[in-house]
View (cartoon, chains in turn orange, green):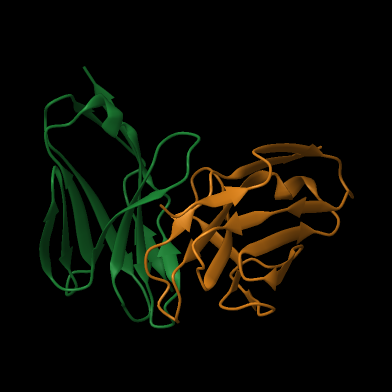
Length: 114
Length: 109
């Protein structure tokens, strides 16, 4: 089974802090994604990557950056956390190619920014 | 613009049948997905439709009508464990997923 692991299930940070959210997948997937999930809204794509060292902006990249130095790892960085970044963050991966196909999600990281 | 609509919440009885509807307007269409998400857990893939018609997979079926921009997920013989949110998503012409807000399904004994 594909396993997507997110480093932290729950985080509490203060405004202005730098936040790292780590995601690792173990099935050699090409594609990796970061979404945020907020009540009453659909999943919103922050960034995605189709290959190592490659990244593309999603629908809401402002205030975030990403890093993909290794194929299995995709990190989301909040350079200076703000209260409006309080959310559930979901990492996902899929097999490869431009067709995103079936996504495999991690359990999520619930971030609270005070 | 791009838009996915699905009901916010539905309630059904254990053992019954429920249909969760999803309507969409997207720029281009490369298929429609349904995912299940239990509270506090990761979404998991249920189905993918790209052609019109009904796809059956055990107790779950998914239907697509591309001309109407409409899909539904049909759950039969409901079990308590089916209590979850059901997410509808379409893939647009750029192969990007557009997500609905999800339908929270509550199953009562």
